[in-house]
Amino acid sequence: MEQKVSVEEGYIRIPAGRVVLEGNLLIPEQAKGLVVFAHGSGSSRHSSRNQYVARVLRDSGLATLLFDLLTMDEEAEDLITGRLRFDIGLLAQRLVGTTDWLQSNQATSCLRLGYFGASTGAAAALVAAAEREDIVGAVVSRGGRPDLAESFLGRVKTPTLLIVGGQDFPVIDMNRKALAKLGVEKKLVIVPGATHLFEEPGALEQVAQLASDWFVKHLEPKGLAAVN
Image 1 (cartoon, helix red, strand yellow):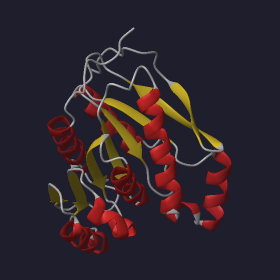
Image 2 (spheres, rainbow, N blue to C red):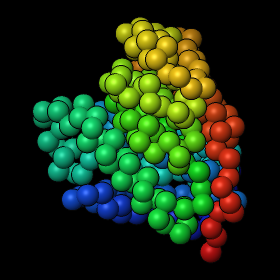
Image 3 (cartoon, one colour):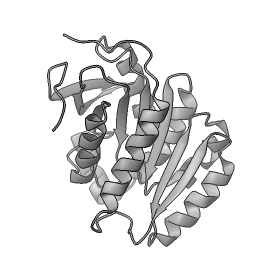
């Protein structure tokens, strides 16, 4: 059963430069940390996969923020062009802006942050982690494209877990090469039999448990979480 939430549940709006991003922030009482989700191409904060992982994380005492890196108009454009989902600079900039907003928000400023990135969102998470190394305590990538953050990998100082499906062959190779370039605590876990979206029975459950263990280990509380 999901823990009681210490701030009002639901929808929030996050200023990020010239745009306002939409998200859902949930903070269990005495939260151990806060995990920010950076979804990949063609996905959103309403993704059933990310929502499932978020529930598992909250059951472990972690706060979660699921938010959209693109506005509704940008998402509509991207469905046609596919351009923005690969604009890692833009996505990382939005994630950094959201990170700064969370640090200035009374309810979240005392929580150490982690990033859970999927597909191209994982590349944005690694770039943002390099830019905010003093704030971000852990990164988890699910079926990610860390190769798209190649020029930043050497700068990442945040413990990083890469999770890839055993049948996602091109992405396995990309992650192995990225792992070799990371100079921090790191781990690559290949989930046997899983494809890119981890739709096989039990595959997403493994992802959620791996992510939960990694975040709980690395997101040491900076202080007491804010409560009403």
